[in-house]
Length: 180
Length: 180
Image (cartoon, rainbow over all chains, first blue to last red; front, side, top):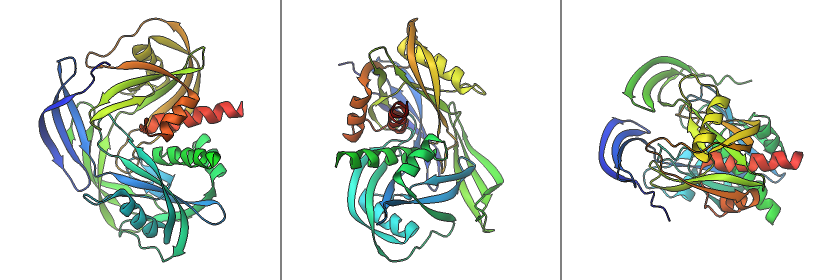
């Protein structure tokens, strides 16, 4: 088994922001060499594939500033410090869709950009329960839409959906359904 | 159609690094409010699902500093400034596997973290052609492995693969094969 581990030698914070911090670390590589590693620290988040009684999934259309365009994504949200993934998921799904989630299934964890970002996304599949009303964050400006799973697959293959977690989760839910 | 576009008012560079830059922008939201937006600028990259004659896919095991652990991913690499995705893909696949790619199919683009990161990953599916030999970047320390597509799906569902592009691309290649 080849040793691959890289160890932190030093850390220099270059930016401490509201959502992200940025560090420049010196790292000791497995081959004994040293290298610089830029790291974006992010609190992590969750994504939720919420299915209604008709087999349709709630999707959020919103402007994503980092990409400079509108995207269509599964409902998602950032974790509060130290918050459990499932707690975040239960909070965010109400905030964005107005529905409580039921029958929660944990699909696993996704690393969107493992090389330089600490972000991990906890992925969930749930069914829509009681409607209790949406309550958005003040600067959230979103449109809710609903699509069948096969429509989501089509939109992925047609590049109408490009968000990493939404692509992965759509297919993981489909795979899960195929296995049941 | 609800207007969602956010416009840049100002940009303040907080960090200019080797791979990433970080900006704090003030943005004008569609509802007339202003908000701060943290943006990680990244040159973007490519991922390549390279299939050999036996239907096995080349995978790279490496330590990912951002996640602090080993990952198993499709071969991938960063773009040089202004470089065309396909050119990057043809270069990177030789560097990491030693094989030239053939029969290149563009699967589309993925946004790993659309909210705060400009990174886009161009996704390709190709078959292995002539072996011309690997040549790694000096601080790249990787192990090459090969798996069948169904093994990759298993490893995704079992959380042995958590990299976003690898999850998405595995299923997109599978979907593509099902349609042929």
